[in-house]
Length: 309
Figure (tube, rainbow, N blue to C red):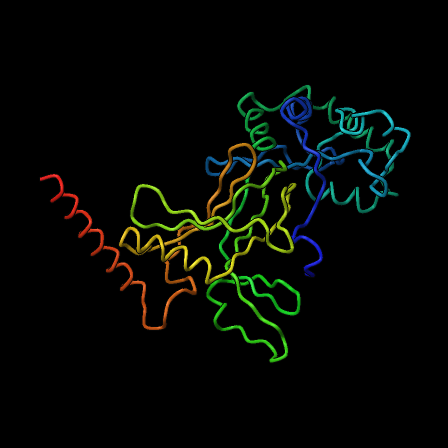
């Protein structure tokens, strides 16, 4: 991907919110496509999953399926209950990909039938609460990665691959630590701090936030299914971690990616061994770093004990 544009994918930013969710899911029992057996919610092994999507009968924007400029003139009408229906993922894609085969009038008839058939059965109050939570709670997937800049392209790879990937001699190359954030929910959110947490054995990890002034600038907002990459210079991060290590006389033993988003949300990647970072000389092992950390922790505890006697 070229550096002339942010590293981000975009889809519709519409979200129905709690009120519309309760109306739409309270008036349906399954996908509106004729004879589709997909229920609104499935439950397996004590877990629930929403099986359908909120679909527009008339598209939000020009070029979309069944877009109607006259209908869209009225503010808010395109995102109102009368223009929305529930379809499973397969049939939502089908009716939008083949818009000429599925005119507005036919989808309105499906919606009317969906509402009529729901009068005999519907979701329980607990299931409706679950649906509202799915459609109103931001959810992100966060991962620590390696980023390689080659010929003005940012290539995302695993951290383990950073030292081993080879490129042509004439290809400018620079490697970075990276964090990828994917919006895996249906709620768009504004992005906050993104970076790496380092575990030094204390009650709270040391957080290193990646710079927000990178070029291309990382996205300031991720809509549903949106994706962004944040990166930081490896020597700069290493120096920051070493400064903390010198201050507390202890080395970190593990790290994880973090991303703050929305009003107060934060998601984390999995903890990984600190040796996975490209900081260390070849003779250094995870075991030796953990031993250093354990020894330093014991010395610190002993100093604390002596200071209280």
